[in-house]
Image 1 (cartoon, rainbow, N blue to C red):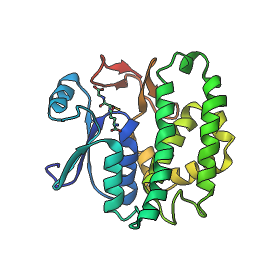
Image 2: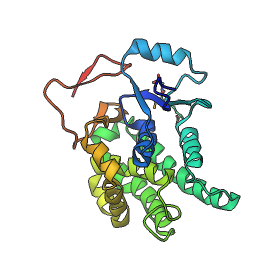
Image 3: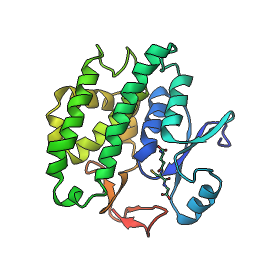
Image 4: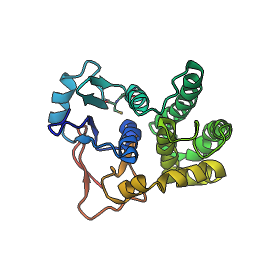
Length: 236
Ligand SMILES: N[C@@H](CCC(=O)N[C@@H](CS)C(=O)NCC(=O)O)C(=O)O
């Protein structure tokens, strides 16, 4: 927990596995400390304190945990997003994990040589198949959200996934009009829109075989660098 008494989210200065959590806090108007580890020394110190040695880490007066999906699940339940009945909760989990699975596949692909040399194979093959499935799931819920009638962790996670496609696979995303419309609708939510426009959002989605995945829409100033615990600062 931070000195201010707000919950603390610790991660790197990338979107990655923390961005859905940042969006939830931001969109819900919940103050939190967005602690970003930028140097190898501070990462080694934090790492030693964590049983699983990975980030993101979340803490509040009651809880100290890692595992991004457990953090999302806790925050979703704490803010009344997750249905209380087991049937509703199972349907909710199905949607959440379907989105998380596609995100994982996208991130794994970024470590393949084809990410740079031949991304169309993935875009026109596996990615398109995943999006056909996700679109079917999304359309199964009447209304603007993935589950029920109000925004939830599923929407925040789906936005993070679709936003990375907006950046690096725009032609593929454009083939899915409803998913694209959902992406725009989330980006237009007032607090999310303000966050994106504020320069608080990390400009790097995550790491890949070829270095940081920098958002092509981000405003980069001369001399800006990506400070990270793994390598020398990388000029952006
Ligand atoms: N399943 C975990 C995976 C956590 C994970 O692998 N985190 C990475 C960053 S995305 C990490 O901390 N790696 C350790 C390192 O880079 O040394 C989650 O979703 O939180």
